[in-house]
Length: 361
Image (cartoon, rainbow, N blue to C red; front, top):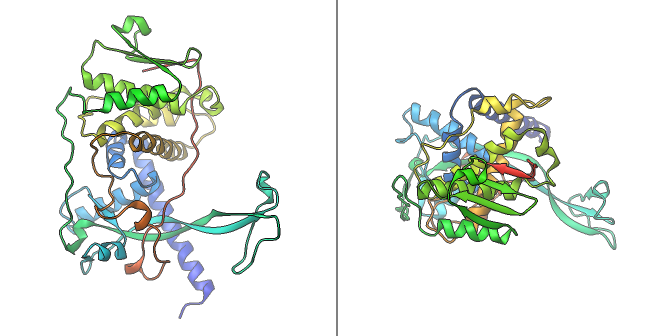
């Protein structure tokens, strides 16, 4: 039986292997033109972190190339026991996809507002009188998930997928996005032509708290532009100091959020243009392009998820098998052997980016 020290070393080796795989996937995005494809994929697995989306994507591609799965894109992924609870069993010989799951611990503090005052409680240790106790992420561990195509058993109930023709607007999406703009305290203006907003498709003005979208383009383009401007409202206000350094990041983030929202509604986004990733990622002084893409990817995913969760619209699956929720499927058993590991809920990262009085598409 392995000692605790050997187990820790094995886990660390797995984490380092995962990090290398993740870095390789992000470097491919930075060097190539696959950013839009990655975002469309992320829209289908929006309940998972951007890093884990990339890990699932690359490992499933490898499995497809090896002939172990029938499709180049996964549909539903879940842990070993979650598939068993759905009446399905991972097929013999199918290797799970390694992802990162958080390790949480209990922390106590007598001065909760002071970040330096928090201390981790040991197992069985109780807080001192007057201390506040919170669960916080203390690290990560490797865990495994499998695509439904790697399992057999009870059929998975298929929910209808939205199918939108090019140029059409998904039912309820325009009104839902408009309501969110108003809820954020901005006035929405539909203007007749781009000459009214400096030649742009849309414009967000933080000083007047107005969002304007031109109407002399097809409905789908109007809705996509509205989603783009809403992303600016949510992500790039004047309080976001870091965003002042590079406008390109903010434009890529806003357009990427719009692409994910459209993809989740079955919209044809092939004509939507996203700036070449290497162009904006490599031009931020003092920043590693890989780190920029990873950070932006997680902000994009979180913002798109926040918008989608508040919309009363028909949306594509989020990658969680029907009958299971993300919470129940990721709060299960501790790590054991490779065929028994299940994902835990993934840690979130803070928003940031962009801040000029006006943002235009």
